[in-house]
Length: 327
Ligand code: UFG
Image (cartoon, rainbow, N blue to C red):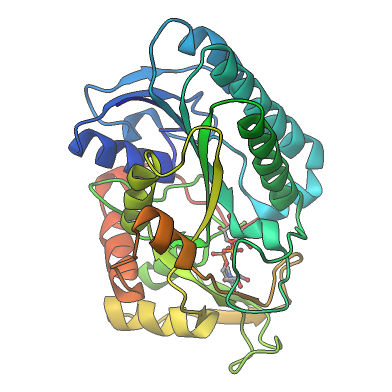
C-alpha cells in the first residue's frame, strides 16, 4: 500500500515506518519535527517537513491507500497546564487531516489513541466498552478525535482503526524513545542507573496497590508496530474499529525498577516523593478485541522491553537527545 505516516519522525511513528518498509509498503512521512527527529526517519523515505494542517496539499492527487496518524502533543502533565495547546494541536490538527482524507478519498486510517481516554477505571481489565472519563486534557483530546473518526466513518466509506495504547516501551530496528523532555518511567529509570540522572523520583508509594506504587500495562513498541500493520486491513468501509493494545499484565513502579536493576545489573538511586497529579492508580488492558479483530497478540515481555530500551539508550543516536529532568 502507499501510506502516509503523519508523525513518522516520533518514537512510535518511526518504528512503525520501519516495519511498513520491511513489509513492502511505500511510505511517505509528514512531520514538522516539533518533537520528532528528522534523523529517526529511515534513509530513502520521503520526508515532507510540514505541519499536519497542510495535509490536503500532501494528499491531493497522490493516490494514498492509507494514512497512519501519530502526530500529537502527548505529555499528560503538560496537557493539564496548557489545554489550549493540546486542543489546537491534537484536535484541530486531526480535524484538518480528516477533512483532507475525506476530500481526497483516502480509504483507510489508523489512529494513535490512548488508554488515557479511560481516566481512572473502576473495573479490570479495561475493555473498549469501559466508560471513557479522561482525567487529563491529553486524554480528552484523543477521545474527541476518536469521536470525530466515528462520525466520519458513519458518513463515508472510510475504514478506520483507533489503537488505544497502554504504556509503550522498548526500542526496535534502531529507533527508540528520545524525547527532549522525558517523563516516562523506563527511560528515566535507565538514565538513573546509568548515572545520566542523579536519581529516579517515585511518584508516591501510598497508592492502594500491593506495594503502594501505581500499576501499568507495558507493551513493547515492536509488538505495537505489528498491530498497526495488521490494522491497515482490519476495518470494513464505513467502520470505525477501536482496539486496546496492552499485554493484560500489570507491573507496579517498584516492579519495573526491580526489572531495570536485574537487566542492567546496576543499582537504581531512588527518592520517594509526592504523587504526580493526574496519575491513575491502575491501568491494565483487555486486548481480547485486538486478538479477535487484528489477529494480534503481544510476544515481548517487560524484560525484553527494558533490555531493548537499555541498548538503544546507550547508542550514539540516543545520546544526541538532550534528556532534561521532568518539569
Ligand atoms: N513514574 C514515576 N517516576 C517517574 C516517571 C513515572 O514514579 O519519573 C510513575 C508514574 O507515576 C506512573 C508510572 O511510573 O505511575 C508510569 O508513568 P509513565 O509516565 O511512564 O506513563 P503514564 O502511565 O503516565 O503514561 C502513559 C502514556 C500516556 C498515556 C497514559 C495513560 O505514556 O501517553 O499512560 O494514563 F496517556
